[in-house]
Image (cartoon, rainbow, N blue to C red; front, side, top):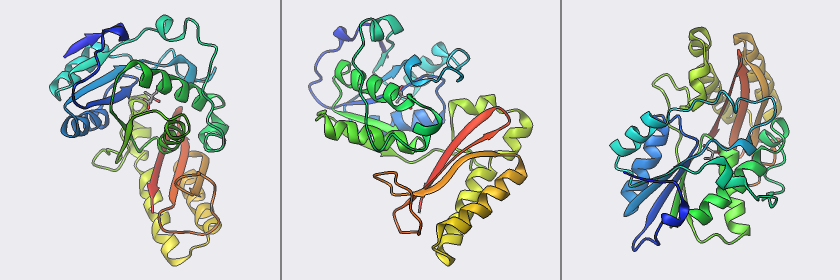
Length: 269
Ligand code: PAF
């Protein structure tokens, strides 16, 4: 594993270079992205950068887990070739230019985390310029992030192939996330109900394609377990526009707090 601190050290790859951008605190879900990159590409680069501009003022930037040494060991164990570790100064010293992806960013995460997707799109755009990757790999757990990046790459003509990888889950269904380590044992025990109830909604849609009653019942059940639901919606998988009736290929998206931990998840139906 070669550590790269200055992106000018990257050389144009002769073959394919798969890229997995991360904020570190690596878990099995990230390692799966790296394994998939490794099997699809000649070489693999990851980046580890806790990007300040995608955190809101009351979010967890300062306490976001930083586990760099362990992350590098894990990356090496799955055959990653390059780990790019930029620092905040090099990334943002002169950045007054930002990437705003209209439309698909507006609702859901965009509403509850204003500015989040501008931060994500800007840093991913910069990383795509700095790392000479031919392919990039993202987890579907951040479903709206995938939609935003897809639009950005399309609209701004980034010459990169995008790969969307299925969410990696704990054996009880909880979607893997670096933030799961914030969960208290009690909240951890409740957390799998989120994915269970998403699946239950899908079953209900097959009997009753009308979205509203299904969502109302699911929100009430989640509240009963102690979740504070921010949104639960059936959306068009490309535009993220809400749907009133179930249609195949649509995605059910959810964000909810359990205790102080915010969880997101989704399922394409
Ligand atoms: O999904 C993430 O970890 C981040 O949003 C990303 C894509 C690395 C950008 O900072």
